[in-house]
Image (cartoon, rainbow, N blue to C red; front, side, top):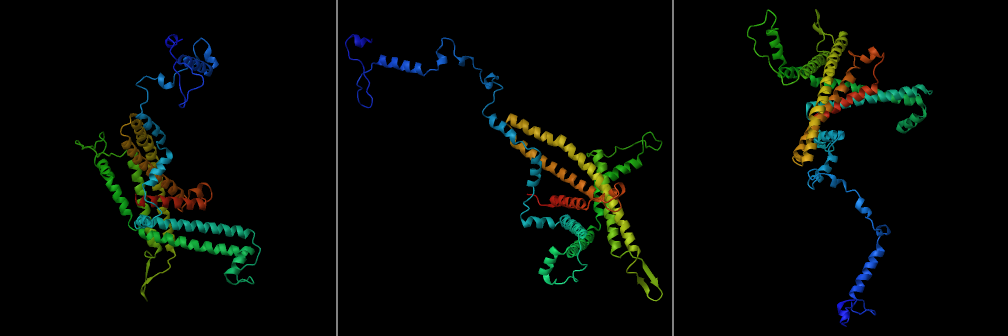
Length: 428
């Protein structure tokens, strides 16, 4: 009982909502009721006299770390960006994003204005025509196996106009076969015409490859080896200057040289094949009656033209194999060194939360270079596939007894042309 109650003073009462309750509750009574309510709300497991179960709960993992190892609020957002470190698909994305949009016609115009761009666009049309020629020829052969109609479209009664011809294509297998053969023949003639038209723009390109070989310094190195033999030989000079040094590895230097020599031989024999096919190199026959007589149809023209084309294919195949070796080894080395180091640099920058933007830009540039190496290797694979099937090489015919699949051959030509179109497409 409170002191005020002992002295006869009225107890302190509380009003709720401005109105006095019917039974006034003293402050001590209120505290006792509050203690009982709190006791009723407690978990029955907490009413025992021993320690609570919460006292035996393990601390969170972050509390077990030393203060120096606990993540700070500044590093946590950067650490979450590790999930955004690019993988294999980011290399393709980086390579494609560096080019302008292919949906704008002005970008295609800029690409086709270059000599290589125009040549490879014509090459796409060339191999597309060849693929369609093969496709419709196959349709004609499959249709011929089940053909049982008459032998000529003109001999069929009731065929007049496009509508009747369209109906005959669905009803008469013989008409359908001849229609497919006609379409195949047209694509074949277009393919041959595109092959000849591309050759005119290759005249003199051997000089370009020779200039590339000279700029590499291979001639200086060979000249040094001829003028300065081995030191143990009796012909060695007393004062031997320092041989020319190369920053490029020996395997890459020799492989690139072999590739350029192959291209140089290809351009030379391809030019010879084109000029021979035009009749410019036909023999001139002198006759007593007409003084000079040029044979317009020399029987040896086709033989000499095909022979030059075969040697052109051999040289290009040699260059393609050398290019495949150089590109494959360059891609593998770039992946193990530059690309790996760029990704480790970004990982370290994220861990230290410093220089993240520079590391990202460096990684993007490295991925673009890596994608270009992938494109170069893809072109080498396509070129080896195509020229291994061409006359003069004919690896499939020699070792398999038959030519390579025509569809696969055309696909290789389309891939090879597409890679060059990518290289000549304007950058963003």
